[in-house]
Structure formats: C-alpha cells, structure tokens
Length: 204
Image 1 (cartoon, rainbow, N blue to C red):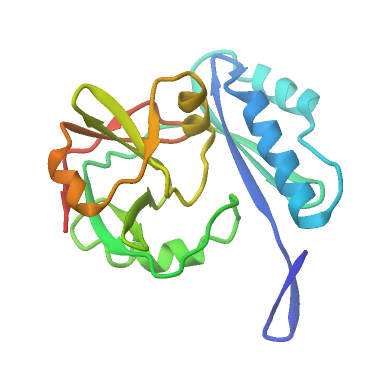
Image 2 (cartoon, rainbow, N blue to C red):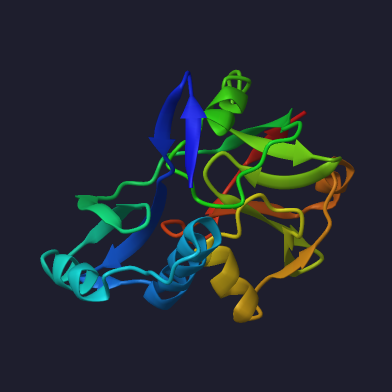
C-alpha cells in the first residue's frame, strides 16, 4: 500500500521498537506477531521479522539497555540499535485528538506531532478521542484505581507492553473518560521500552 502526496507515490513504512536487555530481546513473539499482522493487513502477503537477524544484533550488546528500531514495509528496510535512556516525562496535557487514527505503528507520525504542538509547558500529551482517553504521543497509559490497574479500551495503538500486561492479568481494559481521572490514585505510561513510568500530573 502506498500514499499519494503532491502527485508523488510514497511507500508506507512501519516501525517496531524492541527492548534489548543484556543482549536479550523482550517480548519478541508479540513484536513479531504485530509486524506479521501489519504486513498482511496492508499488503495482503505473509511476512514477518527476520528473527535470526534480530537475535544476532541483540547479542552484539550483551550488557545494558538498548532500543532496537526496525523499519519495514513489505520487507525489512533497516535494523538499528542504540543505547536507551528514558525521557523524563512527568506531566501530560489533555488534548482533543479529533478523528486521529494510529492503529498501526506507522513511521509517519505527523498526525501525532501536530497534536504534540499543543502540549504547552507539559512534557507530553494525553489524547482524547470521542470523549474517551486513548494514549500519549508515544505510549499507552495505565491508571491505578482502588488498588487495581486499568488501561483505556479506547486506545489508539495496541502496544506490545499493553498486550503483554493484559495477557498477564496485571492490567484490565475499560472505558476511561477525562472525568474519571480525578478518581485515579496513580498514572503510568507504558510502551515496549517503559515499565510503568509514573506521571505526576495531567493538565486539562
């Protein structure tokens, strides 16, 4: 599948970001499954990640925390690995996402970046769509309520860490509206690289 921009054809690319801990890829099966679904849904072909290449690249970094970035379309375009240091995100600005669509991990993040311009003095944004909480600009979100952990069922992108935590029974999905935030005991950001990163405040 391609897009037409200004009379030119642009190939649609996607990304998988895999956490490498001491040379070991984390949740590799879930990443591979998502990539396979993405390729099939967009191109109608059976494809996937080159697991032997991923494992080989991961073993080149036997110590420490790394982020492996895989860029692909119908097939792999590039695999890069770099040392990872998490961003210090503590505050989120609630923004209306309109009709934003980001159900696949596209390389093109222009729709998210336009919303990110509204963050003001906050570190990142928390996107509302159709009156319900979805995601931040680069992570899923988890709310602590009454001793339990919940994630929005109205997510934009079903992240790998979100999928892992749901399958493990650690979190439960439910509809969450902006008015529910006042009832939360805690707020966390999660993605393939983040394990329950705490958020201190959300500005409306």
